Image 1: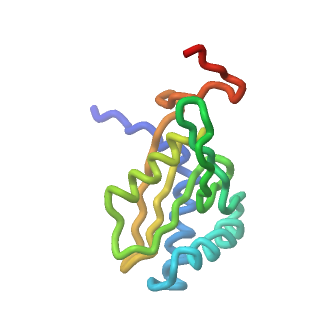
Image 2: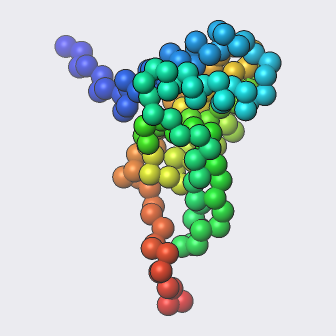
Length: 143
């Protein structure tokens, strides 16, 4: 007897996001810069009833120090990180970028959406139980 596979983490939300991604791709096609697709995707997701934040600041920590804050393209429902690309095709570097964003945040699910020659998406998971949290900002090392 075959066991049912476990449900995807945030499967319903990511399914709705991927659906809207395909609709935006079909309407605009390929060839625009990334920011055009990000700006088109945000209202499409909102129109589908999803809460969307654009260019969300995300701090990066190193040895207890905030060393930089960068911006994530989109975050849906404070649960799913979205990185938008417009490349001929995605490779391991872009997937690693999403993985590092997840490692640096409290988010566990990321989508890499590529508006390239053909629509491509990658789903990336990094559960919070695997993350090393930086010490509090008032942490003082005794070393």
